[in-house]
Image (cartoon, rainbow, N blue to C red; front, side, top):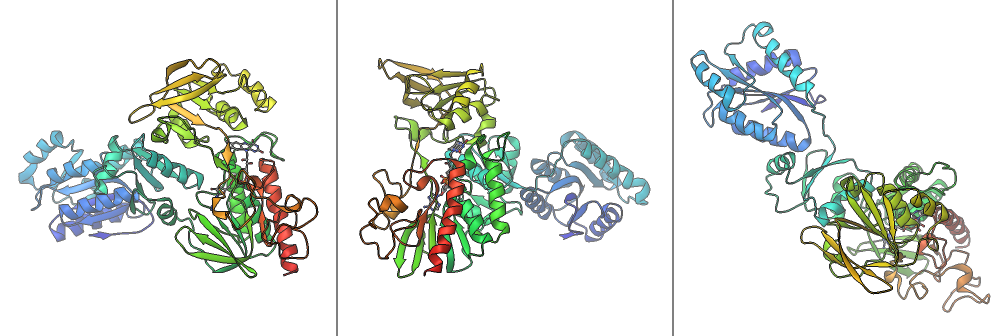
Length: 558
Ligand SMILES: Cc1cc2nc3c(=O)[nH]c(=O)nc-3n(C[C@H](O)[C@H](O)[C@H](O)COP(=O)(O)OP(=O)(O)OC[C@H]3O[C@@H](n4cnc5c(N)ncnc54)[C@H](O)[C@@H]3O)c2cc1C
């Protein structure tokens, strides 16, 4: 098989088992269309089918297929029939000798043939180009947008498919979603040689197929850095939320060799917030994804290295060096570390919920799922600002939004402006003194049993979508025995470690810990993970910046 040109991705494919004829068709096609199309030539039907499958995976577009009728493995009609399974929109031309005109006419009905061409087609200006011009025009008139981005084929209600989509979206990797039970999803599965039992399938922009990928494999294949470029840094930032990104921007911009390590996607909780209204400088609000994407790009521009899909599971102190260990056992070290691991959502503890998570039950806003809720009834559990923001956001598309809250109303737990916004939305209802007692469904959430927290009475309601916002806890178990944490697991720092002006037990220096410094010198904490922190984007960013200033102070005295 031979190809011409690289840049244009729209393809005209020709297949003929006679090498001379094959070359002649390709030559004539290239002469006229080579500048605007890629002309792909094959000499067997199976090579042509293979090429079509590859092009399908790469996201190329096939506009016209020209196939010879008499070929040994399968005739041109059979070939075009198979080609239609891969590119149903491609225009189909059969090349025939005069004696085969009857077969060609039959094929018009059989494979919906667009045209048949009699050999020889000389002069092409009269016999070939007018036909192909017409076919290209009609092909262009229908919707054939190129899909060069990552493609995800998955089951609509699969937790793993949902995780993969969320991961790509949060890492700002453009992708297109194809449910596995729809024709284009099935075509992609067939092109990848998969039967759909192992999902999701991710097809990268360059046509590589990943079956049921984990976050690290996915990150590596879609161009996100997962491996550190050095063994030793000035500063390791653990966590890529606002605090970590703030620290990375200031650290790198002030000349520190900085690496940020994030276990899923940069942005943290803020990256999942549909609209942050109270961040300084954005009077009209800003989506969390937008804000944190800008921060990520800013950190990268200053030279901060950012590793995604790498979870830190250990911190070791080796003299003046601080070692951070990853889940796979590898490690990097630095003079200083900033812990910016934030908090993670608390799980809803009711029978049936765990099994349906990702299948109609989502933690956080799961904004990638919002499109699926259009015109549907949505339930939200939680009474804090995050639940309120999600209600306002989802109400734009959902038929109804019901907020389930244990308290008598929202006023104690939610900001006044959000309570007012919710009151003005006719499709949003607040169901007070209510908790989820059980979730029902086999493949997907179908119903919820709700319990009245005062009377204990239960009621079953139809429900396909449930978003949970019931508070959060720090994920700091891996710091046990290394840095001091409070009774809820938040990291204690600065003056809180030295209440009477006395340094904490085992503190090795003749000064008390700096403001955001933990019980280990040179290890700082910023943002929501810190004991008694403000749990706000602005304060997290501010603490990230301040921690870097304290890193400089620490390094000066090292
Ligand atoms: C839906 C929602 C809406 C919100 N709206 C607002 C708002 O309008 N205004 C406002 O001021 N605040 C808002 N907040 C709160 C705000 O988002 C948080 O206070 C802020 O994100 C905290 O930043 P952080 O960097 O400390 O932690 P996080 O944002 O929690 O980020 C921590 C990061 O660390 C990573 N991590 C954790 N452990 C590890 C590990 N071991 N290894 C590697 N990485 C790790 C996590 O994956 C995460 O990305 C909202 C929060 C939510 C959930």
